[in-house]
Every structure is written in C-alpha cells, then in structure tokens.
Image 1 (tube, rainbow, N blue to C red):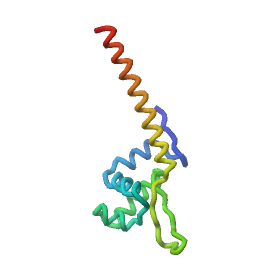
Image 2 (image 1 turned 180 degrees about the horizontal axis):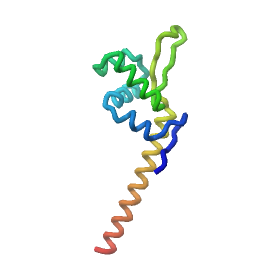
Image 3 (image 1 turned 180 degrees about the vertical axis):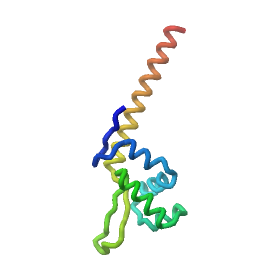
Image 4 (image 1 turned 90 degrees about the vertical axis):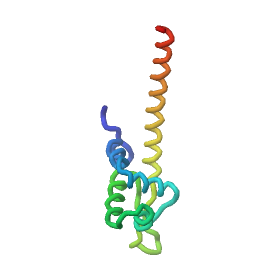
Length: 115
C-alpha cells in the first residue's frame, strides 16, 4: 500500500521504524508519563547520553517527540510526546483493528454457512 502520511509529512513507516527499537519504545513510554530531559531518559534507560541523543533525534524526526526550551534556560532541552502523532497512530490502529474484526466476523459467518 501507499505510505500513510502523518502530521508534518512523516510517514507511518518512518514512525513504526523509529518505534522498532526497544530503547526508543521505552523512551516513549517514559515520556507518556511526563516530559523529561535527555539526561534523565539516559539514566532511567541505562544508556549513554550520546546514545540517548541519537535516539531522541530519530524520535523527533519521526514526529513522535518534540523538544522545548524552558523560558528560564534556553540551553535546557525538555522532551515530550507529540500528541498529534500519537493520536494519528491510535486512529490508524483503530482502523486496522476494525478491518481485522470485520474480516474475522465474515470468516466466522462463512464457516457457519459451509460447515
């Protein structure tokens, strides 16, 4: 099928590729609780700050996280989930699930009629 575009021109394939890595999935799970600094994520996930920076760049490019600078210090970067992308992922999963449920129902009906 065609690549499904999400907010900001990112494709669903790009987003799922970013989520294929377990460290990045764990970072998303932590950011779902509340925004965090890169260093906090690195220590909570047991990875180096430079590795965490790379993971966050991938997540940012995939449209999953955004970086904000608090007004008190422009050097500080705080990462949070992009709710728009998360909502689009949820909508895609809901649509896929409905299609799957419909296929199962028609399959069950076919079995009952032929069985």
